[in-house]
Every structure is written in C-alpha cells, then in structure tokens.
Image (tube, rainbow, N blue to C red; front, side, top):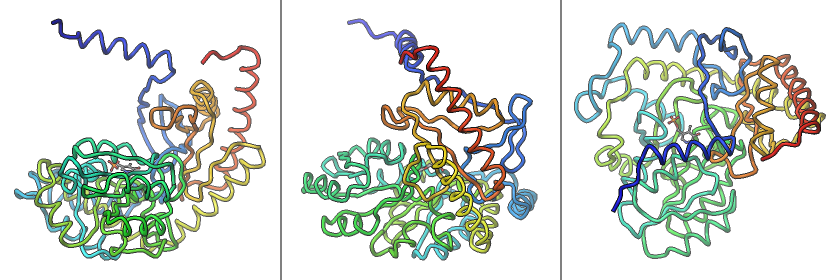
Amino acid sequence: MARPDLHERLQDQRKLREAQGRIRTRRTVSRRDGVRLEIDGRWLTGFCSNDYLGLSQQFEVVAALQDAAARDGAGSTASHLVCGHHALHAQLEQEMADWLGYPRALLFDSGYMANLAVQQALLSEENDVCVQDRLNHASLLDATRLAGCRLRRYPHLDSEGAIRQLKHAPDGAAMLVTDGVFSMDGDIAPLRSLSLVARMQQALFYVDDAHGVGVVGADGRGCVAEAGLGVNEVPLQLATLGKALGGHGAVVLGEEALIRHLAETARPYIYTTALPPAQIAASLAAVKLARRDHWRREKLTELIGLFREGARRLGLELMPSETPIQPLLCGDEATVMALSAALEQSGFLVSAIRPPTVPEGKARLRVTLSALHSAGQVKALVEAIGAARDLVLYQKSLTPVSV
Ligand SMILES: *Cc1c(COP(=O)(O)O)cnc(C)c1O
C-alpha cells in the first residue's frame, strides 16, 4: 500500500484554491494611527478592523500596559494553574463579571481557545450534541470537532430549526450555541426565543458575543443584557478582549459551577501560558473606558446610519445589520476581489470575505466602522465604493468574467 505524498496533495489543493480565486495573502502594516494604516509605503483609511470603540491606541490603555510591563515584565511565565495567575488577571475577571452581571468570569488566551475549552470540557460524551446556527464562527464548529460529540446545525437565526435539531438528538447532553452578533453578517441572534428553546429542550445555552460586548446596548453590555437576559437564561457567554476592547484575550462568564469546571478541566485553559499581566492591565483600562464613554457608541450609531443611508442611495446591497459590521454582498469571488483592489487604489482598505469563511455565492466586502472614523471618511468611503462598483461593472462588460 502506497502512502499518499503530502507535498503532492498540498500542491493539488493550492492549484484548486488558485482556480477558485481563493488564495489568501497577508498585508503587512508598518504603522498604524487610529483608523489610518501604512501598507507598502502608502497610508490607507482602514474599514476592516474590529477596534470598534477605538480603544487599542487610546492613551490610558497603552499607558496602563506600559506601567504594568515595567512592574511585571513581558510575560506571565506560566499557565494559570502553575504560577501564571496574577492579581491583574483576578481583577479583570472580577471587573468583567461585575460589568456583565455574571457570578464569575474566566480569562482565556483568545476567543478561539475559549470556545474550544467550553465545548471540550462540557460535551465529553459521544452522544452529546451541539446545536449551532449555520453561520456561527468557525471556532465554535472546530470546538465541536474537538469535543468529539455530534454537531447539528440550523438555518441562520431560525429558532424553530433549533428546536427540530435538538429534538433529533434526545438522548445525550445538549448545548445550544450561537454568535450574539454574527461576525460576517453583523446581524443579531434572536436570543430571547433561543433561550426559551434551550430551556424547553434542556440544553445549555451558550452565546458567543465576541462582536457585541462593548458595542451593543446603550451601556455596551452586549446582546445578552440588551435582550434582557442574564445568567439564568444564558448560563455561559463569551466576551472577547481583542475586538471592541482593543486588546487581546477572552473571558467566559457563567455560573460558579460551570466556570469552576472549566478552570479545572478545560485543556485549552490548562495547557497554555497565561496572558501577560501587562496585556491584562490594558484590558482593565479599556473596560473602564468602554463603560464610561457612551459617546463612542453614540458616534458609532451615527456613522452606521450615515453609511447605510449612503449605500442605499447608491443602490448597494446592504445586509440587515444595525451593528458596526456592515457587509456589502457582491456574489462571486472575482467581483469582490476587484472591488477591494479598486478601493485600495482610492486609499481605502476594506476586506474581501470569500468562501469558505462565508457560504458559496455570498462573497462580500466586510466594512467595519469605528468610533474613530469621521463622518467625512465614511462619506468618502461610500463614494469610493460607488465608483469602484461602476468601474468593475464596466470592466466586466468588456471582458466576460469566467468564474
Ligand atoms: C473573533 C471571534 C472569535 C475568536 O476570538 P479571538 O480572541 O480572536 O480568538 C470567536 N468568536 C467570534 C464570533 C469571533 O468573531
């Protein structure tokens, strides 16, 4: 029996990605100043970061990081259960629990790892089931694979579909999992009805609110609080520190017993080095600002309205989103790549999102807004998108695109 040659396989896969227009490349940012980015010697206005509140370079946040680094060093030196758990970690867990109204919080090195941890630690048996929205974040799907239990998915936002999937698997323990704000669509899950579904079907409800905490609700407490829910309806939720809070890491909030179980048994928690205390100091400062500065959310709301109004006037295909994630559907990969390139020519960085991150035929420009954008920048972006669209349509009319 001949073993498959791995190098050959990789080459074949690469050729396929080339043919599908799915090669991914990284852009190297040499400097950043708020929403402005220097790439290949040119300054662009970025509309693709998740720094919604504009906290990542905020003076108080960076100063807190510097002070803590001077005192505590660059790293945590060990995992939480060895000797890496610093007073700053404990303080941030307390602060997050207090802000979001949960009994306890547990810090993770990233949202990705937190999601792996939650399912791996709780869904340990083969006939357990994880029921998920079809458009949930990739880390939630990977987590089910790591847990080794069954995965069942329901149509986007469809609570009835969630019931059907739970009824399909009546024998094992169950978890119902959804993004709060959907990362590639910007819309919000129907958390109230999903919480009822979870209760009726005796499933543990887990909400990943990576893009909601800091942004959604007048006080920025995210989708769960905004829906009038708490730990009783949503026993576990995820908040990330790397998006609206401008730092790095994630926090799982939940009931005492669940959090204790995660801290004692979740492998992605136990077998990794704790985040640097200085990084945590930065997040403490960021949470303080996110709680205090309502103007950041008010400014975002204003910019979101401005963007949608402009896009509507141009006849662009908006999605039903009230959040700073404002995708524009383009359809195929070639079109979205051409649009993104044309926008870069006019000085804007907007990411083109393609399958497999989004479903086939749903390639899109993922525009994200930040409290640091000015109304002028948003208006200029809308104009540039209009011009890019006209250019791409014109080019298409000259050369039939073969996709
Ligand atoms: C970004 C994101 C994550 C991962 O968080 P990181 O801290 O970047 O690893 C998890 N879930 C959702 C919905 C996300 O958008």
